[in-house]
Image 1 (cartoon, one colour):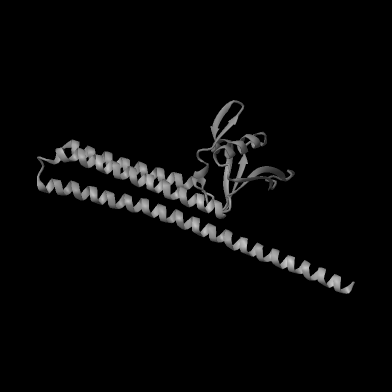
Image 2: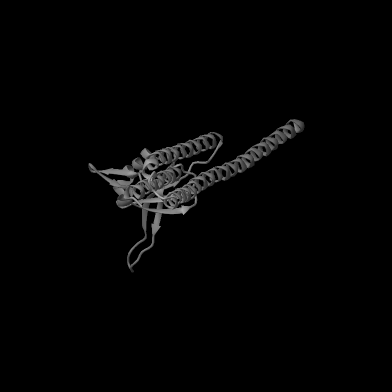
Length: 233
């Protein structure tokens, strides 16, 4: 088989891999849960130098929805917070203290400040934004993959003209298999993201409903107390 045919297939494979990987990266930064990859784009500026967040701080997941970001130097707390806010302004930031136990006899416990990052709740507005963005990113990825396939098919047609039917079938089967695998991977990412959005929204609705009920009960209690006070008077 011609080298040019194999080259065209490899280029298509690379384009597919690139598009699916990019979609995954975008979805990780369309934050619902605390994903470490969402902090990869964060840059921190300290004393005129720009560095990756991982070089300026230690990052740890506190739970599915919170990060602990501990600057290597206490003086860098503000630039670290600013760097995160530049990339993810939607993250809620709160400075808390972490108690480090003494490691040697005679040493005292230390209070180390850190930034607690909390993922925003998926309320009505955020639910709509996340869903529309997830769908738009998916549609764009799908379109780019379809364009890559059309381009490859057009360039392969003259190259395959003098090939045997067996070789033509091999190329077709290889492309079909590649399409099946990458399309499935892309579709599963999209479905999983929509599922995460739906579950987070249901979580918010549950909490919102409980708060609304609590507020109504509180208003009823105040109303009853006021009525009783008026009766007693």
